[in-house]
Length: 211
Image (tube, rainbow, N blue to C red; front, top):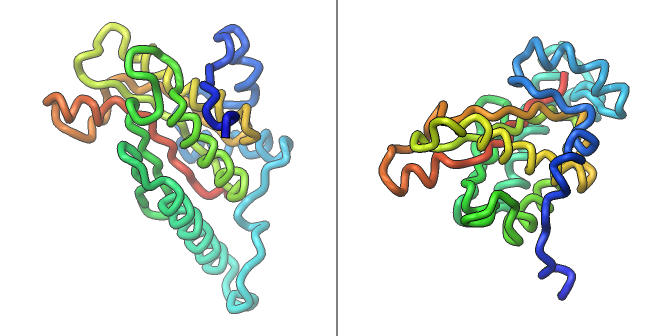
């Protein structure tokens, strides 16, 4: 019981490159994933095509079967994340075969300090366990701020994304799967009133089948 109450603190910033070695600091485009695939496989990663197909897919077109396997794999990932992350400020969404975890900043970080909170560490620990189970995926960790943060928006958003990446790395998630970006105030998902700004300050983890 006491161990679960210990406050997590991100390691010193000077050590972050060590924890994030193998991660890419760019958008997770299809081209970027293709370029990263040899590094991913060399670091022990696996592709969706290596997943055992259901018996019903033993015969038939390979492309269709691979697509069906991806859909089934990502659906199972979505359901498991959804069941495990029923907390305020956290949501799991589906976008085609991609799965997106939205983590509102105040749900995972200290209110007035740039560090992961105790509740946030508990949430990220749960996410880490599931990501290690569903390891035939690439993940993009993207930080966002609200429109009020102007000069420091990119730096603040990248800081949030890196902190999440460091935590996942510390808990066994393969960094060769990771793309880490800070997008500042881009792509708001809510209005610019007080509640909307709280929602726009967030980290999104987008999961894509590794092909």
